[in-house]
Length: 100
Image (cartoon, rainbow, N blue to C red; front, side, top):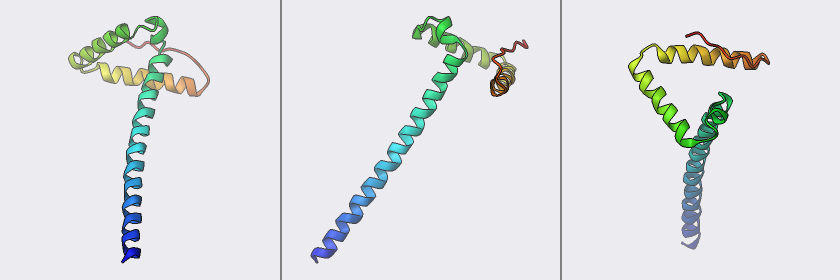
């Protein structure tokens, strides 16, 4: 009876550790995603341009979101520009593209 009780407690403890691990992994993945997005803001030069003012950056992003909702072509244009910039970075260049 005591062995069964200990076995059950071990299984329950293992289950709790697994749940915690899944939660921690999900949290880490979210944190990594947010850090990558912040890196894109930095990479685009917005941090320096806005003098690291979060209100300015947030306002600019709100304007971008509004423009994307109004202009159906904006997202496609931004995606093309971004892909070109990523490709240029991969090739060692730091060129910025303006096609609109």
